Image (cartoon, rainbow, N blue to C red):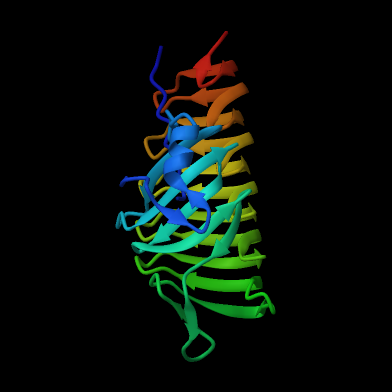
Length: 240
């Protein structure tokens, strides 16, 4: 059987004994099993770094591939508390010039067009964000979370452009990895889910159904040498 080359995607290790208000990572890490896969996290605890500078970290309980309860650090600064997958900013930000705001974790942001900050200090509408590592997001927000259409460009050159829901890739979108691989299709909670097409730099192409980041259901895989498999898949494996 030919080997499939499926790239992994994640948008978000230290001691877990950290508290913020009543979010106790040590308690969560003992209450739930630790996640065994970084591909799709569900019903488990994880604590991992993200972004290439390794100064950003997400820790807590994951449900359906979402951080459901936990904490997020950016640039080694505690930035968000997360409850029922909703973000609450805890870093401080101040207005500087030309409409920009600078935050204590190194990020800066600016409202664009219909973007505004409400009386509860939550962001809505169109914004641009620039993180300390050079990553950039431009798109729509609702209650401080990415919602609707937006484009995220990581500092390694990886780009996602498409729909978001509650801060996660959900709906239709296109992800281009820095190595040149491209996935275009449906997403759910930051996972390839539904129908989509994955084109590898080496010429391999898969087009068909996905479930929770795995090839699953009916689909066609064409290798660069011309070999083809078309049929059913289960959790990334050919079943016909």
